[in-house]
Length: 189
Length: 189
DNA sequence: GTCTATAAGTCGATAGAC
DNA sequence: GTCTATCGACTTATAGAC
Image 1 (cartoon, chains in turn orange, red, brown, yellow):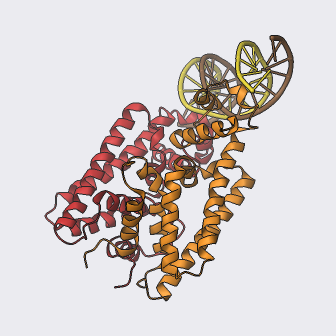
Image 2 (spheres, rainbow over the protein chains, first blue to last red):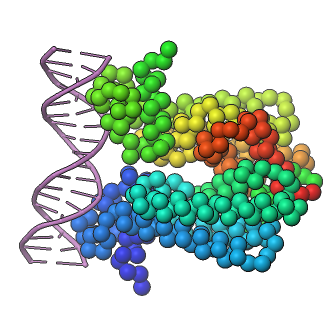
Image 3 (tube, helix red, strand yellow):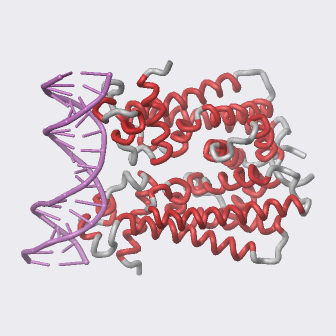
């Protein structure tokens, strides 16, 4: 059984994604939940509070996943495939709140913003190191690791928007095609 | 010499990109331009008006570019490379207003929103057909064309955000690396 | 063409009855 | 714990002096 706080957060995430944080009013959220705006404050303390919780929880999920994968003893190319797999899974399981990571984080207040960008920068640094290791291992051709990182991450970050239009696709199939596009390339060999 | 209207549009684009359309007030724009908010209305008729102009002008630039490339007699794989080249060029030349296409279009009023999504859908359809033709020509491996489209487009759409952090890179070099990552793939052959 | 003043509405959040 | 009523700040946009 979901607490009313959880229900409010779910509704807020859906609206933040659809209309953006600034354009979503407490009255909008209240209507979606089925109560008056003033009543929301019995369960949450502010609009910014639930926004921070949604965003930072998601960022921490990614950080934990990265720590687990990067801390393993796998080869870097396998780590990369596991990262792609994680992004696919999160895009399916947390479609709404994951969108905030790509688009809405700028509306965080100063202190949570610092925490968020710190987590994100650390995540990107570890991701880039894995790519560099793929090149050193000889599994990747000697491409600019920053451009490769950017290319892979921007695709993974928009997975959620594309997946929500194509619910019929098999997640396992999607993951396989994703690795094909991002790693093996499209050109026929 | 730039008209005051042009200056206002430039400032607005920069702020819309940085803080989002909803979070940018007429006072913010006025301060950036160096006048009072009320004075802006001697040059523009509303905030939504300049927003629409920025967004639809950019969308039409992409449509024109697509028409020219798709209407040429080149092989599809060459068309694709020319599309990538166009995205790189636009990301450099129109860094601010191009960001609105990816993030802020949801705040368009009903009628311009219809026009925008119609242009975007048509653009994506032509892009996908070029990818399908690459597969038929045997230049691409038989990948899901929708996933390939999504993978390429999401990377190209985030070029601007990445390029503005890395001004030192050569555009020609960037274009070459882009084609490498998106078409040839990262895996060593 | 720029300003001050202000209209008319919406925002997040609170007070207090029930 | 939900409601109605409302505060004070902020929003886009206009009126009218200069």
